[in-house]
Amino acid sequence: MQLLWQILVNGILLGGLYALMALGLVLVWGVLNIVNLAHGALIMLGAYACYYLFTGFGWDPFAALPAAMAMLFCLGYLIQRCVLNLVIRAPMFNSLLVTFGLEVVITYLAQFLFSADFRTVNPSYAGANFSFLGATVPLVRVLAFGIALALTVALWLFLEHTRIGRAIRATAQNLVAARLYGVNPRQLYALTFGIGAALAGAAGALYGVVSQINPYIGAGLTAKSFAIAIIGGLEKSIYVLVGGLFLGVVEALTALYIGPTYTDVVSFGILVLVLIVRPSGLLGRTA
Amino acid sequence: MKPALKFASAALVVGVFATVPLWGSAVLVQFGINALILATLAQSWNIIGGYTGYPSFGNSVFYGLGGYGVAIAMVQYHLSFALGLILGATLAVLFAFLIGLPVLRLRGHYFAIATLGLAEVMTAIVSNLEIAGRNIGLILPLAKGDALFFELSLALVVVTTLTVAWISRSRFGFGLIAIRENEEAAAVMGVNTTLYKVLAFALCSVFSAVAGGIHAYWITYLDPGSAFDVALNVQMIIMAVFGGPGTIFGPILGAFALSAISEILASKITSLASIFFGVVIVVAIVFMPRGFADLIQNFRRLGWRYFQENLKAHRV
Image (cartoon, rainbow over all chains, first blue to last red; front, side):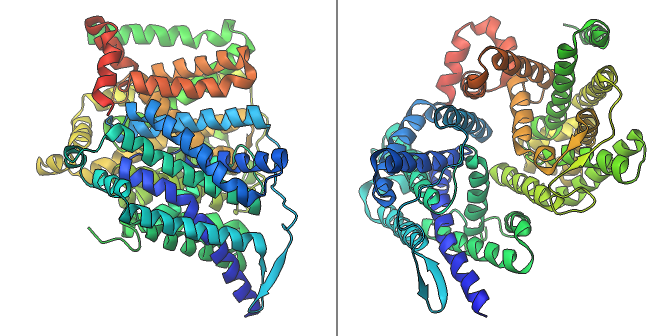
């Protein structure tokens, strides 16, 4: 029972980070109809931004997080403005391939610049933990969980209650109508992708604190983000949180009861099953 | 070009290719085997992705099953290579039918991601199978020399391309194209869409599996990561799209062009080769989204305006 409780806590903490990972992917997918295969690579860049600010300038990783987000926002804005805006009306498959090309460029540029070595962000409090109702909880994971949760809620509030947020949602629903109301799609698409990239950057910064990073983690993180996005459904950003927590807990339970090498079988198996049985996500309305 | 002339020149090219192992250097032959296997993969992806319009990311599963069919047959049961190929192809066809029925109901992004998920599931399952050597992989008996593999791969490309050529002018192929253009309309016209899609999926699984089997025996080593590599799947898609999806020779052209580009890049600027490869992909899709075949057809008419028109049509 003690063990199960501990595993559940671990799963929930990991699930929060998972949700943040998928959040940017879902935003870009939902609004721009681009399935961004470079999403994991952007997460990886966020992790490296945090790593270099930490080792090079001695910034606390959690203070480096907003800086990583800002950098990734600029990069994402430029990617959409200069590249993806050129293919956004092409068949959806072309934009997918372009994002794959971008993933290759980013990954190998990272390998060239940062080397293929494993890196970890190790602040002085990395080993600190406390006890919560009998379960041991590492401090950094709780902080990461809290920030992931806060950013998810912040995005939701932003989309619901600000002018730009409403413009983004309007564009997702009907581009022509949004245009008639004065939305500049080039600008808005770039902004949306920038926000998606910034969220990836935040997820990366947190990922670097709780796990090891190298330039090749991107592809796996993209696949995981897909699983979370599909399980939660694309309708509301808040659903992603449910998808992330669900996957985190399921993976933790699988590792405990079936074996750690089976976590991918289960999580991607669920992805396929959900797609077949409920393509709009576990929480989405059935079409 | 008249069709007869087209096929005569294609036969001539194949004939010349078949002599490569006689005079080519070892490097050239090895490059050829890789390019031919990739051409087979791109061509078989063309059946489901190019003609039917279902962007499959699960073809690397067929490729991996073909490789494991050969590896398991030869290592665990000491059977012949040919029996291994049959085992691999059978596994792949079974998989295509079992998985195709539910998954081919999904469309667009959802189909792509479901097949991507399946590739990940298969990697993870095979990594846990004792008979497949878990995640360490299997080491196959030593192979018989590059010339044999070259001819085998060449024959496979030819058979695959002939199949695609047949598809492009058969009732079956018209059904597939109808599904790509408008699935509801195709169904109304009396095309049994489920049957057609699953058959197309099964057909491309056979060729991909045989390609995987040949490659595994040639490399003499197989592990789950490389057998079910999603990047390989993306590579075959890019080759098909680069050449011209839904055309007979496009995917072959794309496979050879991109293999050559990446080979040259790798020898000239080793560390930056992959970066440039990524740039080539992005630029190619932005400026010639319908592939090389379409470029050749329309460039004479439009000249440089061809690229401009493409940009204008797809940007926001």
